Length: 141
Image (cartoon, rainbow, N blue to C red):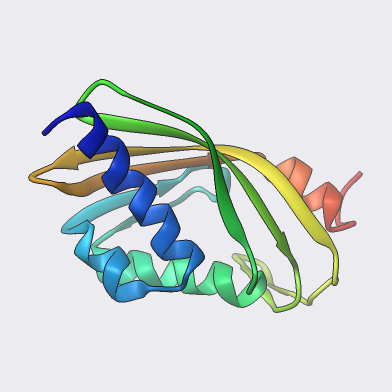
């Protein structure tokens, strides 16, 4: 796999999330993929289970988009600097219960790292600034 291929698979995964194209997202993801969402301490194994987390984010922020600012790779790992932009109009699921919609916009930066094997993402680490998000939603200061 070329460096561009590793970046393209990971970028395509973000674009599939943006478009709520879950079939495409699954086609880019290994069945036994491990997803580590560091800010929420959510670590999930299995592409079908990961899609459920993606859908929950889209329920809370239906228009959220990942805008890719920069991408780099070592051929096996693609690292994307992403800005997540959206409006909180649905319930945000948390371990302590749902946070009702605030109607507020978020714009948070993050880093999404995909480990590629056989042309698919087999591990993804998603780092984003939870404190900035909670501040922008008016839930922290």
